[in-house]
Image (cartoon, rainbow, N blue to C red; front, side, top):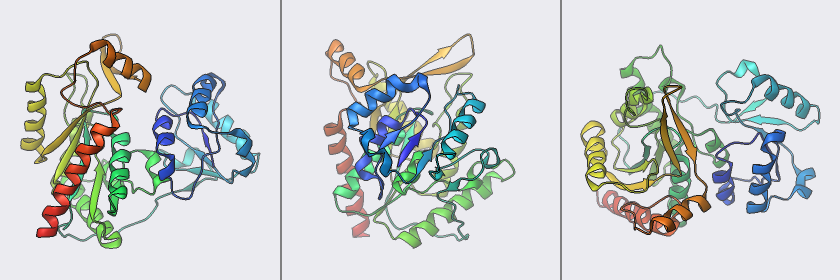
Length: 334
């Protein structure tokens, strides 16, 4: 398949492309201003354009913030004329784009039961916090350990890996908080009954807390709903990148998650992104740091971090394996 347009998470998608189910990425299309970034990605992950003629579908991603929608729509019309089927993972307004197909449109019945397998949650301080990359890494470890996982992702790219998305009720304005909690519980239990996994892996949307006075993070409603709907056994927390973390700060994060959400944070990770408050726009800016830049920062600092960075794969893998083994063993004894 081919992909359009450029997306910040393409680097992560290509890093884990071997996990894609029955699909191979043969080219990435985008706007002229994205070509330099695309060429670097294609070279890094050996995406060879000569196989483009074998593509039997074009995956269309939502445009990133700042892309003019009319420009995006015109490019789609141009691509449709080439006769390649267009596939869409998820859209905020399906009526804006016609003649596309959709992944993950299943409807589930409501029931209420406890879920008798370990549940691991991937959490973050906010959006753009490496949660999807942590999810992919964790699921890859689970598969290599020989366990079957049920994965629910808040990232639209999750559909490519046959991950489930969250139910619509989670974000509907006309659904009460109580109904959202019940609906979430029923949804996960129904998936469990259908899939019979060894454990469940959840990527929690949004962030766990407010970021200053202007960063509400939806008042952490998603984390509140999901943690009340399910008994989460373990949490892996992604923190925005900074050169050093005070141990008292890390302990406060652990205690906050435990007392507010009942989630025991077993692992803390430093994300690829850092954030900075913009006084002019009165909003938070997010800076996406590539692997080479992060390694250079670490070498300049020379100090060992109190928590691993997401790029330190070996260290992360060992810690995540230990978490999985611990909870699988606990549930096997029950």
